[in-house]
Length: 202
Image (cartoon, rainbow, N blue to C red; front, side, top):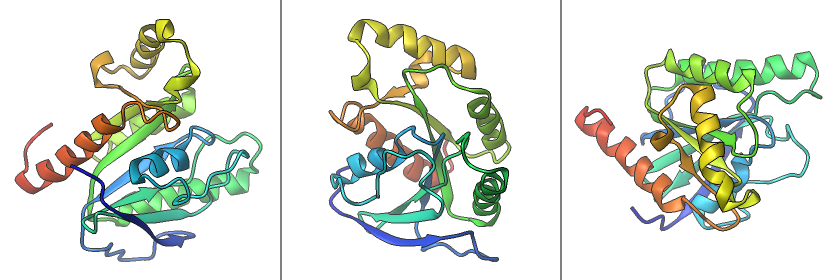
């Protein structure tokens, strides 16, 4: 699949009751604050200005929707685990994430981002367990591959796989700076969409 175009649709402070979506498959992006969700989306879109990026963690405080190729939507969910956010803010973000998953009927896959430089946190493990309850295919991508040495890639991937109890081969290494792993991610998105039509398992 080739990404020909991508555009911003809208932002929501929550998900309205009886959310009907946009009539196309949706792929949700989840991850801790500062994991690089906006940069990841911009890389997929070939547009570094599509999703707003910030050097300050925790800036994504809305549910943001982006239309890709006019036939699927990327849903950028608020980052979790930002320690400096107030408990009230954290609860609001959690409610937004929960509300989206509860209301959407169009979700065909979830991409969970983790930072390759760090061992997944308790928040990451809890989020993955939470996502499993929805019985939706999940793809784990390790961001910021360009920030480590090539000699460290295997060990860092093994650490993430072991912590999250996943097969090492299932984790896609990515870099928004160099576009490393981009084609693999796009191929996986295509599989998620096609499998949702045919009812096949990944």
